[in-house]
Image 1 (spheres, rainbow, N blue to C red):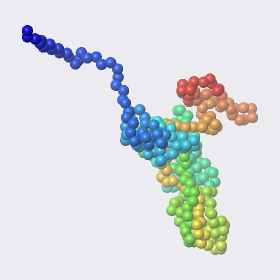
Image 2: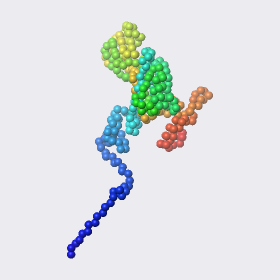
Image 3: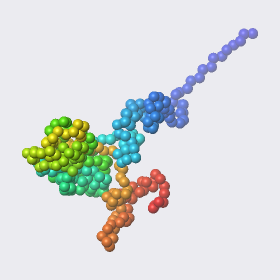
Image 4: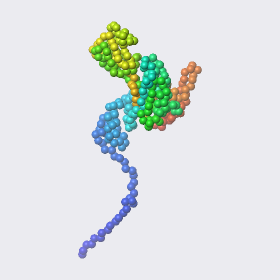
Amino acid sequence: MTAGFNTISHSFEVADVSIRGIPVPNPVFNEFDYFGTLLGLKRLPEEKNDSYKTRLLDVFTHRASSTYTGLVNGITRELGLTLFKPITISVRTDIDPTWSPRIEFVDNIVYIWKDIATKLLDKTIDRATPGTEAYFIGGLVDAINSSTEFTAVLNDSDYEWQRSDCIVNQSSSKLVQQQPLLSSRSNFLGLGNIDKTSVVFSDVLTFRTEVSSQSLVTSSGKYYINYKTGIIKSFSVPDAGASILYSYLQEPFIPVASKVIIRPFNTQEFQSVLFNQTIQPDGTTTNATPTALGAEIINELLSVVPMYWGE
C-alpha cells in the first residue's frame, strides 16, 4: 500500500489583517541615562540622545537652586525648554555724560534710571497687565525706545508677540566682586560706565579721599576716578594684593528670557496686578477681588493642585 500526500495551499491578502493597539516606544537605558541619574535630570519621553546631552551639559552652565535664577534655570531645563535672548538694549549717544543710566527688570515692572547714583528715575513700564503697551515684547521695545536713555531692537521678529514677562528679573548693572589693582599710580578697570555708589577699595589708605579731577591728586590718600572710562589715578601705589569692587553698565545689554515665568506673590507690585486694589481711609491700598489675570493664574493653579480658595 502506497502512502499518498495531498498538497494544500492557502493565500490571504495583507489588507485583511487587522492590527490592534498602538506601538509604544521602549527607551533603552544607556550612558546618557546613567549621567542623568547622577545629575538628577531624567530623559524626557521619546527624547533623543543629542537633545538629552545638551540638557545634561546645561546643568553645569545654568545652575539650579532655590533662588529666583536657580528656579528659572531648573524648571526651564526640566521642561526641555531653553533660555533665549529676545532683544538688545543700547545706551543713547546723546545722554548726559555725567549720568550713569540703568535699566532693571523687577517682577512686573521695568525701571529705567537716568542716573542710578542719584536715583533719578526716567520711567517705569508695566509689562504684566494685559492690554498695556509693553505686555508683549514688541510693545516693550517701543516703550524702551520712548525713554531718554536707551534704545532697543528685536533680535528676531518671532519674539514680537511673546509676553514680555518672559524676560527674567535682571539688571543692566553687572557686579565685579574682586578685580586686582596694579602696583601703579594708574589703573584701568577695562570697563566704562561705572556706578559711582558701588566702588569699594580694599586699600582704604591709598584710596582715602576722592577728588573731582586728576589735577587735584596732590597728596597721600587722594585719588580720582573717571567713571565714564574706568581710569583710576592715585597719588600712591596701591598695596600688593589690593583690589576693587564695583558695578558697571553692560553695553549693549542683552537680557535673558525664559518661557517659564516666575513671580513672587509677596511683592506689592505683583499683587497689584493680580488683585484689584481698594483704597483705605488712611490712604493705603489692600488687595480685593482678583483681576482677569489673577483669576486666570488662580484657576490654573487650582486645576493642577485642587484646593479651596484661601488655603
